[in-house]
Structure formats: structure tokens, C-alpha cells
Amino acid sequence: MKLITRSLVTTALAGCIGMSFTIPSWSEDITLNMAVPDWPPTRIMKRLFDEKYKAPSGNNVTLEVDFIPWPDYYTRLNASLTSGEQKYNMAVSDSQWLGAFIEGGYYRKLNDLIDADPELKATLDDMHPAPLQAYATYPYKSDNIYGFPQMPDILITYARSDVLCHPDEQAGFQEKFGEKLPCTPEELDGMDWDMFEKIGQFFQRKKGDMLMGEPAEDDFYGISYQAGKGYDFSSMQINGFLWQGGGSIWDETKIPDGQAEGVVNSDASVKAFEHYLRLLKYMPPVVKTGSMDIFKTDELFREGKTALNVQWIGFAESVINPDTSKVAGDVVFAAMPGTKQADGTINRTSNIGGQPFVIMTWTEDDKIKEAVDFVKWWLSPEIQHEFAAAGGQSAIKSVYNDPKYVTYRPWNRTWAPGLEWQQDVWHVPQFFELLVQQQEQYDLAITGKQDAKTTLDAIAKFQQQLLEDADLIQ
Image (tube, rainbow, N blue to C red; front, side, top):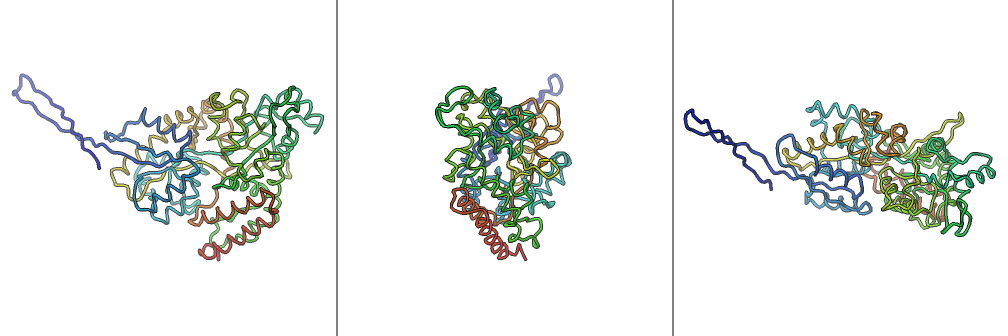
């Protein structure tokens, strides 16, 4: 229930008619309830709101945030929305959920609000198309807008400069492969998956083996990336391999003509998936348990167990914090590796991460107005710069193209170039069924129970039938 606060302003006209006038002005106490995943970008958002936000309306606006652990987030948000409790006015949503929750009647279409607000429209016009399409549109890449970017994110390379630049390791790598071991951010920007694999092979060391001129205190490995059965953890990395290798996932922008069979399991897709699987043998053995998710790769790297990690930018803040990372002073950041093409260029196409704000369909008009004002404040250049300076990222071109943007954090140098390679997984309501079956099949291959072709054949067959039954494939 909203509370009304009445403030009285009294003006005495002394020496005039001996009367005073009481002029009432009204302000409302309004609370916006928001569900969010619990990780640094949403914690930074809440802190900035509490410290700086003043509603343009003059109302007393409070942002009540329900921080939910990432592994439980979809399940708990889905349970809340489908229960009818109408607990949240807003949420930070993964883009894959758009179709399911829009068709379910939970996420509000925003085009009317944007069309009525030239300032908001100008902000969206200044946004890179990749995050805007991924976080806002349903159907994917249509003109229907349902979200505003909260935290855009991409996969990049985290690297141990102390390991890679050590003279002994440089000499050993040169002797073994006849190539220089990349160690600076600029050198690592040129790394393809073949070089990534060589680094993985080179840095397989057992406890007691020489590492940086001294016996290793524990087993050490060169490389890691997502290969976990939970949620979308393997899919996010595998999708990039498929696209880079000339394969594809089912393409919803081609509804109803886009097929799954013959595409998902094409020869190019199988070859690209085999490439992904081949690198796993150079990673910590936990990868063979199907539990190499984003949290495990992050933990292993912060614990000093790997030389390279392909990870979302959203985890980078904890890597450079001495309180949470044993390698905080020895990390550099570079572009994610890619697949070298026939002309020598590197294809780095990748599945975009990050999330949008959404507004719920039952939110009252006065709260919608406050929600839009909050989003406009969040996307304003001043706050976007503050968010980036605290470890977040911005999708606003005029913000991330500002020369000072790259000075905020060492990984920001990768941001603008990386955005050019991003595309997204499905937005359709059937995404969860597609994802669960795909993750289970990928896990069979990752854990060595099934080969790449059998895996992709099973995925393609399942997706073809499911999507035909949903009239999304003819």
C-alpha cells in the first residue's frame, strides 16, 4: 500500500494583510520491488541507487531488491510469476526468458513508453544493437521492445601474466612450439583456439613439477572455460564454437522456415563441437564431472590453478580483489580466443551474456512512471560512467567510446571490440525445454559417454520435433 506524505509550506505576508497562506504539496512514498540475480553488477546498482537516486517526480522512491543466487534464480522467479502473487514490479531477466515470460503475460511491452519519451528513445538509439536486440526484443531482432539493459556482458580471456611472461616459461614454450608464448594483453588479443590449446598442453604440471622456476605447490593447468551441465553453462561456450566454425544453432529469426535437423547437426557443427571437446583434456579434471560451470572456472582461476580462463566480465571484479583472489596482482585481460579463418582473420562470434530490466504487466501506472524514470537515470551517461568505474559495463556507445572508459578497469579495453561479435541464443517460450535437453546431451559428450555427432544428432532430432509441435518449424 502506498503512503501519502503531506508537506506544508507556509508564507507569512508580514506587514501586509496580517494573513498567512498554507500551500500544500504532495509527495508519495513509492516502493519498487525488483528481483535480481545476486552478483556484483546488481549489488553495485543497489548501492548507487541508495546513495544517489532522487526521483524527478519528487516522490520518495525506494528500491526493494530481492537478491537471489544465480543457480536458483530462474526457478524462483518462475515460481513467483506463475503463482500469481505479483510480488515484483520489475526484474533483471536473462534474455532467454523473454519469450516464455512474455507469452505467459508477465513482462510488459515497452514501445508505448519509449515512443512517448524522446529522451528515453534517444538513449536507446545510442545503444549498441547487439545488447539491445538480445536484451529487449521478442521475437528476437524484431521491433518489439520488452527490456532495458542493466548489465551487458561478454566472454573475455583472464590471464596470469606472472606465469605467461616468466622467462623460463617463455623459453620452454619457444623451444617446444617454435612460437612466442603470448603474455601481454595485446599479444593475447591475437590468440586463436589453436594457441589456446597449445598453452593448455604446455602448462599441464603436476605438484612438484617446475613452474616459474620453482616446484609447483599443487597441480596446475593452462586453460579453462565453461563445460557445466547446470543451466546454460556449456551452451554459452559451445554456441561460439559452432558459429565460429560455420555451424549454427536453430535460428528463430527464420521462423517458420528455419530447420533444426541438418543445421544443429551439420558437418560444420559437428566439427566445431569436436574442437570444443578436444580442449577439455587440458583442463582441470573436474571438467570430466560435468561441473565446470562459471563459478568453478572462476574459483579455479582465483585460486591460482589455471593460467587462462574464458569468463564473463561480470566476474572480473573479484579476480583483481586481494580479499577474494590469490592472483589479484598478476592478472591481465584480453579478447576471447576465436577460430582462425582461411584468410588469417579470427572469427570471435560469441553468445552474449548480461541481462535486461523488465517491468511486470500488473505494475500500476504510477509505479511504471517511477520505474521508467529509474531506468532513464540508470542509463544516463553520469550513472553509466559510475557503474563502469565500479566494475560494471555500459551498452551506451557515447559512454564506452569515451576515452576515459578504458581507464576504469583493465578489462574495459576488450569491451568495444568484443561487442561487435555478439549474438544471442533463442528467445522463444520453449527455450527451457530446448536448453535442458541440450545441456544433458552436451554433458554426455563432455563426460566422455558420447561422441560429438551422436550428441548433435540427438539434440537436432529433439529440437526439430519440439519446434514442429509448437508450429515454429514447418
